[in-house]
Image (tube, rainbow, N blue to C red; front, side):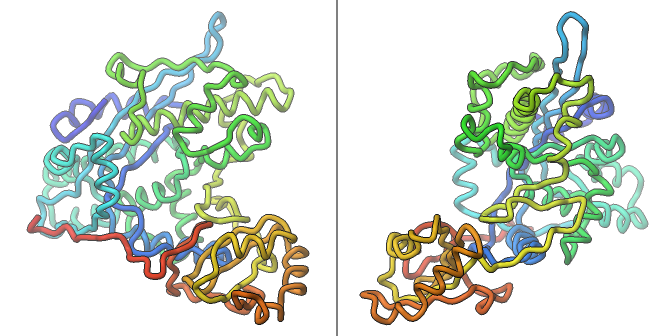
Length: 432
C-alpha cells in the first residue's frame, strides 16, 4: 500500500496493530544518494574506520521512501505455518512547518536518474512525503511547540516508535546504510564511534537480520550464485527451496510482477527470501523444523550486518565487539600508469586469488588468501620490480596504512581512469 501524508492518519492504526502482533518487519529505504564523492574503502580499514567512512559518505543524504513489509506467522493443524504480509510504502519528507527544521540535504544525480527509471514519483515525495522527527529534535521542539503542531510533525516517527515498543525484529538486505539512515532520521545524529552506534541502535532495535549475510551460509554454495536482492529472490524460488505460504493483501495485485526499487516491494522480497532460506538451512542440517519462530532457527545470523566491499571481514557484529584482525595478508603495490589489472593479477597468480583495491592510478592494495601466501609473494616479488617491463614495488600494507581522509579513486577489481571525477552533486535548499 502506498502511504503519503494524505492517507497516513487513516492507515496508521492498521500499521501499528500489525506491528504489535508481527513476527518480524522487513524494511528497505530509497535514498537521494549513496555516497558523497569518491569511494575510500580499503582492505586495511578497521571496523571503526569503515563505520566512519560510511557515515561520512551518507550523512548528508535523505530517505525518499521507507518500505515496511510486516510478516505475521499463522499456524494451523491442517495447513501448517504460513504468513500474512502487510506491505506499506511510505513517502517521507522532512518536516518544514517549523523554521527550526528547515533541513538541507544533498542529491546524487545518478541515484535520482536510477530511481526515475523505476517510476519514483518525485512530486509525490515532495508534496506528499510524511513528516518525521528524530528523538533529539522532538525533545528540543517539545519545549516550545504546541501539542497539535508536535503531533503533526511526528508523523512517520510514530511508526518507528511502534516498532521499538514492540521490540519487533528488523530484517533488511545489505542494510548497514539503511540502519544508519534510520538512526539519523529517527534517533539523532550518528555517533562518532561504532561502539556507541551499536549500543544505541540495539536499545531500539535489539534484533536485526541481514539476508545478505544469511545468503553466505554454506547451504547455499551451489544454489545462490548472486546475493544481489533481485537475484537472491529469484534463486530462493528455485527447485531446491521449499514453498513458504505467504498471503499478500488485495491491495497489492501488482506484486505478482517485479516492482524492484519500490521500497516496500524490496522489503517484501527481503522477507520472503529470509523465510525460504531459513527453511533450506533447517533441511540442510537434517533437522525437523521446531515449533519455534523462524528467526530462532537463524540465531547464528542475528545482529550480523553485511560489510560492503570488505574482502575478508564479511560483516559487522551489532551485539559484540569486533574480533581482532590483522592485515598481514594484504600487500601494498606502487607502479607507473601503464600497469593494468591483468598485469597485477598475473604477477600474483602463483600465490592464490588476488583481490585488487585501487588507491589511485599508480598504487593499489592486493589482498591474498592468507598471510602465508602474502609472505611468499613478498619474498619472491620484492626487489624484482625494477627489472620488470613495468616497474613496481611491493611491500606490506601495514607499512602504508592510509589515514581516514586519504583519497582513493576506485575500490573494485578494475582499472581506474587516470582522472576519475566524482559524481555530480547538487544541494537542495529552502529555495528549491
